[in-house]
Amino acid sequence: MTTGDIAPPVPPAHGPICIIGASGRSGSALCRALLAEGQQIIAVVRSQGKLAPDIAEACLAVRIADLTDSTTLPLALEDATVVVNTAHARHLPAILPATTAPIVALGSTRKFTHWPDDHGRGVLAGEAALKADGRPSIILHPTMIYGAQGEDNVQRLAKLLERLPVIPLPGGGRSLVQPIDQRDVTRCLVSAIHLIQNGAVTGPESIVIAGPTAVAYRTFVRMVLYFAGLGGRPIISLPGWMLMALSHVTRHLRRLPQIAPEEVRRLLEDKNFDVGPMERRLGVRPVPLASGLHHLFGRRSHQTQEP
Image (cartoon, rainbow, N blue to C red):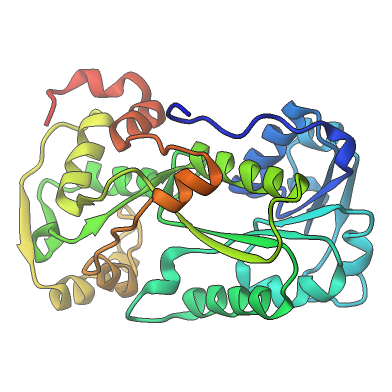
């Protein structure tokens, strides 16, 4: 398959697909992709007003549910032939007893961190619940996601870079990152659903999804500067502990986006993953970072010189 390809569309005769977190970035993108195929969608959200009107109108049903309420959650998931959880994976232990349907879920490569936090521990707990349950399921672990409308990773970084004349990076930004385009996350979710619908999944599976290659964080920063049309900035190396201390200052500066010490510490970890399983099992070749950033920022990069 070529870059960005997904598995062939599946006829909607398989029955409704229940999307938990349908109003979120990944959930809404998935809803639109499945609706374009002609699939029947049941959107599960915490508040109906948050769901995009075009999705709400096209869905088979929109159901309100609290993922911590064991009495009403089964009603929200009723009739689903596949349940897709795009909310946090920590909810999987509550979702599994509420339905007998196969599961597709989003996790996170945060589960690999050397400094576990509530996010990473929640992902590990969700994955463990899927494995213990044993039903056909696929949990996808994306790296940092960029490219979605309103995402707060790359676009937040661009806003920060716009305000900094000099870019301080822990360890000089030598650690590796491997961001994934939101479009690829959607393609991977759709492909996982197709595999389950076609009976090609017999038990729990876990797959890392990422961009095609890892790059040094300093290279990533320079690419964001270029494609966001911000021009060049000198990069200086600072110890991680110093940047973690300075991150507390951003809480008091309204013009600067807040950066938590934990985010600085994670910049010292390499994120370098094999996308072979993603390509072979899901049939998705990830979009190159340059192509994804160009798509995200549009023509603003033409105002600067290439890094």
